[in-house]
Amino acid sequence: MSEKSDRVLRVAKADDAKVRALVSEIVTFPCSQVIGKALWLDAGATPELTKILLVDSSAKILLNGDFGHIFGTTAEVRWRRIDEAHYDILILSDTPLEIEGADALGEGWNIRERHLMVKHDKEVPRVSAQMYLAPNGAVQFVSYREVLR
Image 1: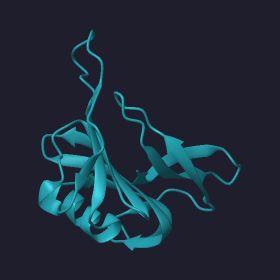
Image 2 (image 1 turned 30 degrees about the horizontal axis):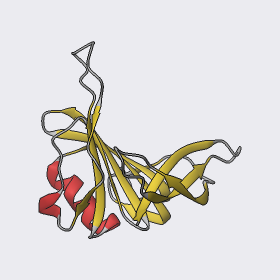
Image 3 (image 1 turned 180 degrees about the vertical axis):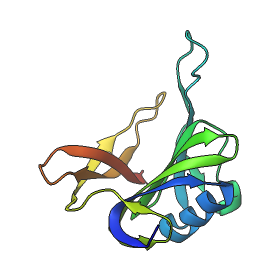
C-alpha cells in the first residue's frame, strides 16, 4: 500500500501500538474517548457504551471493547476489533493526511461543522462535530470533535 492523502482513510489491520501511534500523531492529547461492547453472543443484551472519557496520554487509551472512538479538535480515530490483537481503523480528519499503510476512502468529501447535544444519564453536554458528506451531499459520517461544557 502506498501513502495516500485524504480526509477519510482506513487502516485495515492494526495492532495496539499502531492505534496508539495514530491517535498520538493525528488526534493528539488531550482528547476524548468512547468505547463500547456489542455483546454479539448474548441475544438479550443491550450494547454497552462508556461515558465520554478524557484521555491525556497514549497509555490511557482504552482498547478493551469491541469498538471505540477517540477524538480531538481536528480528527477522530475509530477502531473496531477484528480479533484478539488487531483492529480495523477509520480516520476522519479536517485536513488531508498522508499515512503509510492507509487507504483513502473516496474523494471530494465536503465537511460541515455542527454542534450536537449528547445525553448520558442526567448530563447533557454539547459536542462539536463534523459531518462528512459524499460528493452527492449524503451524510456518510458524523465525527465528534470536542466536548463543550
